[in-house]
Length: 194
Image 1: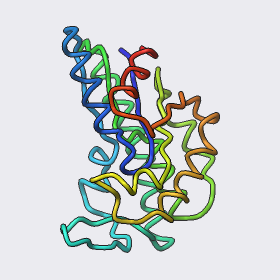
Image 2: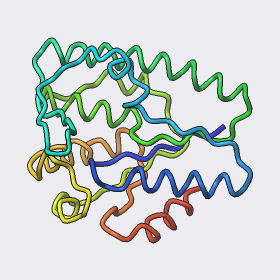
Image 3: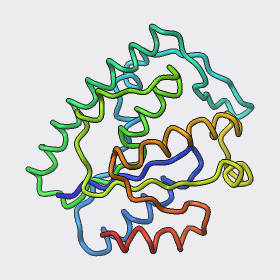
């Protein structure tokens, strides 16, 4: 079973590419499990974290800052999520799945925590199940903000997160893909890594 992850800024096209990849693999009769670290997290399930958020007109909430206790809870929740994912990974392998496709893998969770606490986290990557293929859609914040669906946190938020991602590409052995191009061109490159 192979684990493929796509990481990147909010609005970079991760979900679109994961969906395209899922359809492509399923068309080849592969058993594919879709995984989203944010939806999987116990912090989401139990709603234990309530960092400061901005509310848009669409009633969508976006995390922009958190206090020390909320950051501690996020870090603790991430450790629990990593253990839970290892169990899920083994279960899916035993059920003969061919692929796990992850939109917003734990790398994205680490970047979010680092953004909130403004310091580098060193311990978590050793707990993370290493993907067989980790892709980083490197997309310019200016281009994301010109798209129809853009993050409500704004360009400064995207620039700060991009700096964190860019510093981690080598640490996490990620394949860098230029996310500023069209969907089909990006997807063709992703397929070339399979």
